[in-house]
Structure formats: C-alpha cells, structure tokens
Length: 254
Length: 85
Image (tube, rainbow over all chains, first blue to last red; front, side, top):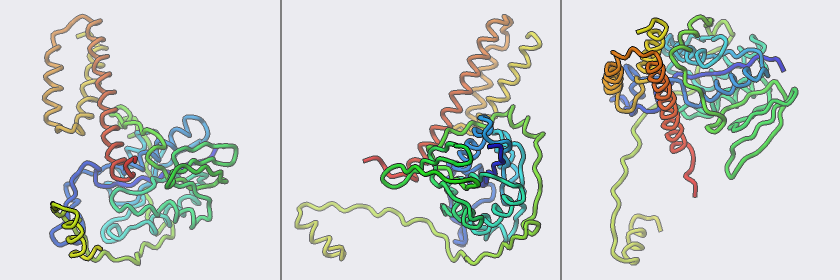
C-alpha cells in the first residue's frame, strides 16, 4: 500500500502535573501549566512513523486542533518523523467547547481533503478521557475501525488489528481506508531529541480554519461544574464481626 | 580541544540540557550536575579519552530516554488498566 496516514495529536496538560481545579469550579487551571502531547497520541505517531519506515505508507501527516500553542505539539510529531503538519486553528470559546464530535468532523473532512488511507488516533486523551473521537470519525466517514489496537499489521489492502478488550485480545481484519486508535502496548514511542526537533523546523505546518473545511463547531454540551474528586474518607476499625455487620446495617449497605 | 570533537561535546551538552528539562528532580538540579560533570573534564586533551567521555554521555542520553518512557508507561498503566490479579 502506498497511502497517506493522518495522525491526530492533542495538546494536553502534561501527565506528571498535579491538576488543580479553578476556584470558580468552571474548569482546571491551564495558564502557566506544562502541556505536552497526549501519551496515547505519541503512540499513534510512533505507529504511523513505523509504517512509513517499513515503506508501507508514503506520507505521515500530523493534525492538531487548537490555539497557537498546538503548533508545538505538531512540531513534536514532526520531530518524531511525521512529514508535514496541519494546524486547525480553534481558539477562545470554540476551543473551550471543542470536543470529540467537533474534532471527528474536522478529521473526517481532512481525511477526504488529503485523501488519507489510514487515520491513527490515540485511544483517549488524558484530560477528558472521552475515548470517542476515533469511533466518531470512523462513523462519519463510514470507515471500519480498529480501536484499542495493541498490534497493527498491514496485509495487502486490509489491516489486521489485535485489540485489547476486557478479558483478553481480539484479532480482527478490516478493509482500508480505516481508523485505528492506539492503546498503551502498541509500541514504544521514540523521544523527540533536540537534533530531530531542529531538523523538523524545516517541515511545513499548514494553517487551516474549521470553516474552510465546512465544519460547524457548535457544541451541544455545556460544562456545568468541575470539582475535585471526593477526599478519601478515613477507614473505621471494628473489634468483632458483629460490630462490622452492625456498622454496615447502620450505613444502609446491608 | 580538537575542533570536530568540540562540536561533538557541544551537541552532547545541548542534548542533555534539553533532556534535563523533564528530569523528575527538577531541571535546575539536573543542569547543576550536568555542568559539574562537564567542567570536571574540561582540561582533557587526549582525543581518545574525549571520545570515550562523549560515548558515556550518549549512554546517559539513552538511560534518560528509557527513564522517561518507563515513568510515563507506568503512570498510564496504573491509571488506565486494572491491576493484574
């Protein structure tokens, strides 16, 4: 196959940062907080670059939707081996309400525009944990999907995908074009070292607006409140089994 | 320092400095130790010895990359996957 792979990469708060909820409970603090590429997106980029290195695909295009800073995330993808980038500019209120539905509409439009054979996404973002964009993109394009992929093998014009599911692994064979979402064990992403980042500066990042792709960004969702998870209650010690049963009955659990 | 080797040493220093930004104990801690390690060898003139030191530096780069990967992998595994019974 000599097709083109589209890889979606998302800029999220770095996984090692301690998240703090804003005092007005409308969201989490993002100003001045370290951001980086979503770990599952890193795995997606690695898989795409591996396919190119094996000469199974001819071009890897990295896509990110968001404000100016999303370009840094695309640069990281380019440093990992993507050929060029597309920055879909979304900022302000549109960015606040940007969710899987809007992103999947954008990815679907780009897939048609760029004539992509494969779309690889991370299985979910570590900030919203939606796990929806890949599935929605496949549905919008009416393409088959290989989600939670822990192994991907190209076989002629089909793809063999080993999926991580509850209770084990499932192997499926799907036609191309297709959407894949990357799970943790798919591969080991390479580190974007300084020399590679320097080289990647020569690669192009195209700037696109959602309106250019004919995508409407209005969201049907409204965030009402964001709070910290409940503090863990201290446990209680009891002396006998009778006490335990008594306490369980008291709290209405038995 | 011989000219081509000077380039190598600079490359090594810059790469390590860049990697150090993500060091768990903090970028400042890393930078201090990095500078100290390089300064300790700044009077070395034997090209063979310099090549060896650069190779050791490259090895440290690989170890840091592995450290960062393992940290991230373990964090993701802990957060998203059920512990093995």
